[in-house]
Structure formats: C-alpha cells, structure tokens
Image (cartoon, rainbow, N blue to C red; front, side):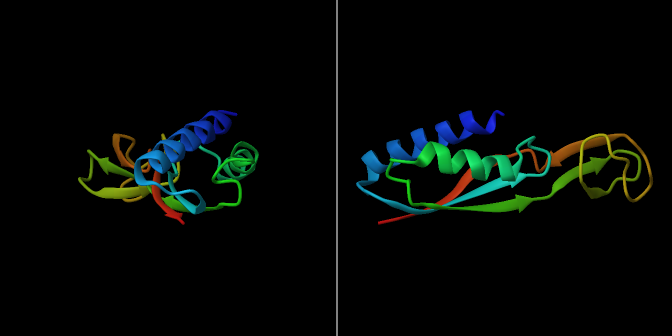
Length: 113
C-alpha cells in the first residue's frame, strides 16, 4: 500500500506550503489521479484520513479528480483513451501504444483558511 507514503508526502507539501504562504488550516485537498498511475482512489481516501489526523489538514476533505489514461497509437495514428496498460487500441486493435496521459498523481488545488 504505497498510498500511505503518498499521503505522507502530500502532508509534507501541505506543511511546507503552510509555512511559505502563512495559512493555518486546510479545508479541501483536490488531487488529480490518473487511471494509469497505479494509485487506488479508495486506498488513498483511507490513508488520507489516517495520515492527516492531528495535522493542519485533519479536517480537510479529499476530492479526487479522475484523469483518463491516454495513448498514441503508432499503427492508426490516433490519440486514444485506454483504461489500463497493454490494452489494445480501441480504434484499430493494435498494440503499439505510447502512453501520453493518465500516469500522474498531483495536488491540483488546496482550499485553505
């Protein structure tokens, strides 16, 4: 469950930003999680609540923005949406796909007071 260490890293970033931007409480954390990022949203929610407890984000709400997996198909020349790695191209059925989206996990926005 690497989501725990991801949440610990998120808390580090929040604490760093709180020092730099002088805020004392986080109301909402919006995360973008790509379909190909190997991050489980439900595990992320569970770990988020556990890690943020007692911190300036202890009462924060976690919002997850799903990002579709995308790839460039070398056979048909289309940018296509894929649900997981090694899926065939939904356009031509080819397997020569180069992933170009949906691998990310990042903090999109913090709502603070």
